[in-house]
Length: 477
Image (tube, rainbow, N blue to C red; front, top):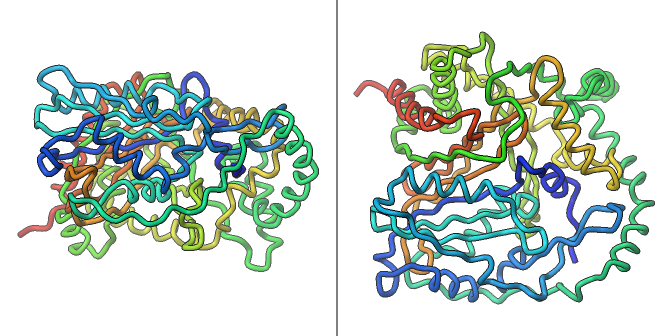
């Protein structure tokens, strides 16, 4: 058994009939390199059966503690059914990108069954290119971005022929606990709650405004007062105030997804020309594309938007532990600046400030802040906090999510089929109905954009504008 952390549990708590907590990726694969030139459901299942001993999270099932007395546990599913988790479908002719994106959006809009391990995989054929798509869907409570990459690293190979697999670690699954045992564990955990809270106070209180609880009345004042009492003064408040846009409202149950790629060489040319980083360029062109969308809809604010940027705090010792090890940083998204070069320089300066703040924050801040809420009311408190951030008078906490994940620049293979692209499919929540996630692979930046279907029905406009914004920054040859 393995107990969820408070941060893992938060991704479960935020789920309701309109928003889900799973993430995924849409992999495009060339079956011509696979044995027999074929990649289908049978081949993918065979690969998973071979590698499941190396992937314990894929067999974990959620076990809730009665009465919510403590955080849930992961237990090994003794009735694991691979056929349930791996599914196949085919697009109708012609099988273009728009159809694939629509099918992805529909699949990702559906919640995962909590009675089973929290993942699904879809093998999608019928693409007009002759390629095969593999859509993975796994709950954020199980993995964050880096631990999700660990799982993909165990499924993907460096050569079509595969590789010799390492010996799996000794299983610690044990028996599946019953309700009485979980209740006993929960009762034993009750006395630990005040201890966890007291241990979390010194790190969490001065930085409360850097957590989702920062939206609550008085949180900023408490953080400032506590920070002044610290010897180092703390990192100080962000002073970022997010303006309201049409994608900062309660989300519907339905999603829209678009994907596309940009050349990494073009981004690096801009980086070198202006003395910035690849991430600066990515965030800046995202700002420009969102600015164009806001102008198109006559709702461009005078002040910058506020982007939530997830940052990994996973250490080398925490590799292979799965779960979530992240901070949620805030940075201005300079949609108020029309000139692309000025916007890039402003983005560079803003992200430098964000990096300084990141270095000043404790790595376990989000977990520490969550320890102020007893597990028995944790789910309700998390939902109320996010609901308040959406409906409170004035402003949302953040406007959108932007995440840039570096990936390998060499070819990878799934069951012998070459990976051509890997588009992220991330999560949106109430008050943050737009997510832009990008992963670099094989000389390209693979963008996956997710939005609420009703708030941004023309999401493809943002993807189109990303390329146009990069072209505006291209140095003269």
